[in-house]
Length: 85
Image (cartoon, rainbow, N blue to C red; front, side):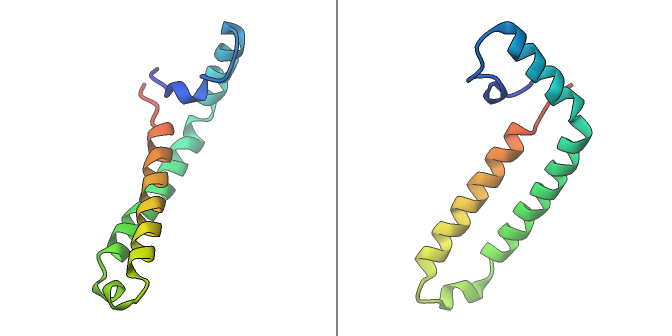
């Protein structure tokens, strides 16, 4: 299984890393559901971002920065939760 190294990089010792890997793999059904939820949120965010009414706001730049940050965070979480079998 291919798992993001972020799950392990702060752990010292092979035994702790193996325990973490077993834990992560044991939670695969939950991670799959979480990925679906996060992907749905990202899709909705991208639809909201495309709304022309956002451009009417005097705070458009701040709204855009917030949307970009949220999208980046969701994409990072999706990568973290991607576990290839």
